[in-house]
Image 1 (tube, helix red, strand yellow):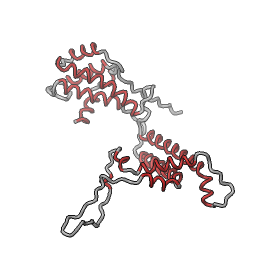
Image 2 (cartoon, helix red, strand yellow):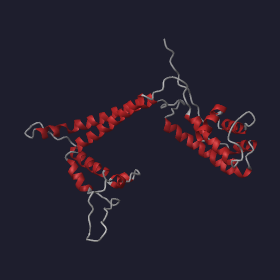
Image 3 (tube, helix red, strand yellow):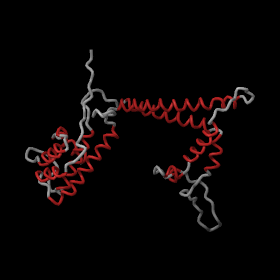
Image 4 (cartoon, one colour):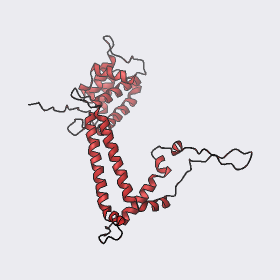
Length: 282
């Protein structure tokens, strides 16, 4: 019978900081006094950043990483696709009576469901808003970069330069468009949701080739913390100390060790992790 694999706990750093104790650590590490204020701000920012990072990468309350392998992320995509398909099915059920009536207007069984009109108007307007240049710009997409220039240019008269259309100020008749979309609001909405579901399934399929099986789990929290400690080391000593570790020079290691002990993550500090992180950050 195979042994059940127990997820490795990643641990974390302290969520609160004793600044008086931290100053003692800084003094023992030989940090110049005029760098203390910067270091105090750094330690506060670090604790906040780690909490946000842990939430982003999916760290559970049990301190294990919920999303750490491609196959698990693929499973999340598949689950999300299933939810979207369920949403599409619900919209389709809501719209079925009307679609049957469209196919056979003589049908005596058409009974409009309560809320259909409100749904159509709301979704129609929402979809029209999605086509607005301002909506896309709010996500940093400049639609003028994706509009093809016409082959023919208009001219205002002989001997004058042709006038190039101005696409930056392109606006659409949202009210008119939403009115046009009302009759097809539900079918279009179903189509959009289905497409998003398919996209997630494609993403999940692409991850299958990258699936990791077995082996030691990486600790992205540790990598993040060690990287930030290295940058602190560089800043407090103004780059006067070398950023490497060897048999003769272990200043960076001892500095990192002191900080890791202080933030209650002593296991984060190993020479191998520091050297690996140094290679990554250049």
